[in-house]
Each structure stands twice: as C-alpha cells, then as structure tokens.
Length: 409
Length: 77
Image (cartoon, rainbow over all chains, first blue to last red):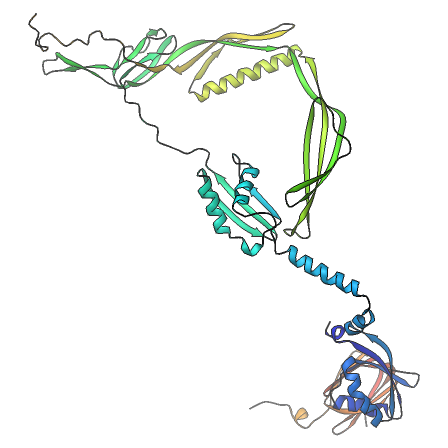
C-alpha cells in the first residue's frame, strides 16, 4: 500500500559496472527490490523519488538507467490529470457520503400502542426534531424528557442514535391506577336474581337470609340498618351502615342466542391495482398507473428504505401500494357449521361469566337450526354472587323506642 | 552487559537457507557479481558464492539480502 501511494518504477540497468551501482544504492540507502538478471541487463524496482537520487550514481559507475514501467498513485493521478470531472465526481461522492452519514434519516418508534407513530412524529417535529437534522444536534436525554412530559401515561422512553437512525423505545402505562373512592353511603344488599343461597359471609350489616333460603330478585339479603342494644338487650336506636357481604346463590339463567343461518364472506376477486411512490424525508411522491375504481377494496402499503449498511439509512425510500378488489358473497351455513358457531358463542358466554366469578354447574342450552335463522336457548345453572347494593328505603322498625324518644303518649 | 555472539562481534557473515529456494545473507558488505546463475557477495573476511538457476535478489538493504531461485551450491572463497 505504501509502495503504491509513493509510486514506483521498474528500471533496466545496463553498462560497465552494474554491481558497483547496486552497492552504491545500498550505501546511499536507496531501496531496491525485485532484482533480476536477463539478457545482459538487470531489472529492479525502486521508488519514484529515489530515481533522481541515483542518477549521479549511474553517471559515476558508467551505467545507464532506463524506465520500463511506472506504477502507483502519483502516476495514476498524473495520467488522468485532464479528467477533472472524474476526480470531481469522486470528491463529490465522498462528500455526499460524509454528509449523508451526519444526518438523521430515519426515526423509528417501538412499543407504542395508544399513541400512533404520526402523533409522536408530530410532537417531535413541533420541537424541531425532524428527518434530516444533524446527528450532533440530537440530544437523546431531551427527547426522552419531552415525550415523558407531553404524555403522562408514557412511563418509560429510551432514545438512541444508531447509524443514521433515531430509535425511540416507549413503554406505555395500560391505565393510570387511581385508588377507587370508597362509597360510604348506607345501603342494603339485595338479590340481583332469583336463586337458592349456598354461601353467605357478612362483614357489615344484618343478614336477612340463610343458606338454603330461596330468594327472589330484589329481596333484601343483608340489611344496612343495624340495631344498637343497651345492656338489657333492648334496642336503643338504629344505625345505618353500608352493608358488605359475599352472597353466593345457585341460579338458573335463560340463555338465548340468535344468528343468521347465512354468513357474509369477504374475499379478493383477483383484480388489483399497484402503484409506486418515492419517499423522501417523510414526503411521498407517487407514480400511479391508472386509478383503482373498486366498490370495495383493501389497500396495503409496503415501504422499502434504502440503506448502505445495517443502520446507515439514506433519506430515500420506495413504497408499493397494492389495492385489491374485494367482493362479498353470502354462504348458507350447514347444520354442522351452525352448531360450531353456536358452541363458540356459548363458550364465549361461559368465559365472560367466569370472569365475573360465576361457576357454571349445568348447561341445558340447545340449538335449533332453521332455514333463515339459528337460535340457541336453554337454562344455565350456576353458582354466582347475587348481592348488589341498593339505597335503604325501608324505614320499618326504625322508629325510636317509646321509652327513649321522650314522648309520653 | 549486552550479550553478543562472538561470530557477530567479529563481523562474520550469517546465512539462513530455507530449502533450496531461499537464502538470507546478513552482515555482508556488497555485491561482487550477479547473474541469474551466480551471485557473489563480499563479507568482512570472506566471499560467499551462491550458484543455481533463475536466481533473483528479492530485496537487499545495507545489512540483509534475500536471494530466491533454484539453489545448487553455496560456497566460500
């Protein structure tokens, strides 16, 4: 490499005392290599700048030097000295590559669900963080702070520059947790459904039912009106509290489901329209071949970013938009397919029930298959919590005892 | 004290031969003769002659020389 950069010559040496010339080169520390002998002459390589130094030596030793080959960068540049556009092109491309490598050409967000890329990009753009900005002006800490301050439910942000990309990772809070305010208004617990009580655990209030009792919808299960006794076990007064209890009952619920026996299916017709666009700094310039004029269609965008290395993205990208024509047709469900759909709906219903703490004991639901509509119906027997709060309306038994209210009558 | 072998202290020529195709000569003074069949090198106390075919001097500096080619004989004069 050093030899190429300095430039070197292949020289033919002839004359009276070639060995003496070679020894003098050695003495004057002129580098000589690749020395061969043939046809009464010597040939060797030497550096371009040493050639001028060894001319006096050749004169002294009565030898002649004849250059047979010139090689290396200095000769290359001299040979192409007139081709200014060529060198200008090389310089320009090096400059362009350098310029392209000191700017941000791609900003990527990961981990965002409720905030779209466009929303986050708009926020960054408002704060002068844009495609094409200099990498040296990017402050990852400021970007992290900006996003956290702007969106309070984004709990963690990490920004990093990798090549010509700005990668922003986000973690969102699924919901801001606030301590629910405890409702302290006095109330009773009433039955939300008819059923037979199988379990009752009272924490506050007076239980009005016991295990095995048959209760009707709306019936008071736990009363929020609590009598206060004196030492003689006489009721002194009544206090209203917020009743609190776990009441589980065996219930029978009517299950009803109805769905059409004809299903609408959407599918591609095979006709499609493709158009291309060039993306530059977030702006799209389209090349379209005709307009897709479909009643129903499905559009897919696919974008390819140009890059030199793994993370050395360029400001150019190419995108393909494919519009597929869709059509809808109706398909009659077979009895088997209808039954599968009924089962699926039923399982979904059971899953929802289980989420509410309902335990399914018996399932008597059946399906009826008709030409137009399929219906599912039947009883579902389950164990489920039935206590729901209800404001105290009952005033019976709340009158103060005669002895204590100071009324003589 | 720097330990130097007596040969080098006396300025003796040092030869390293790799197979039949490479010879390194150190501590030499100059080239007396060079053809593709004979290379005669002057050392302090003797001359070294390398005989062979297609002999080439790959490089030479003030202290060391590398000869490549097909070597038949090396002798002192």
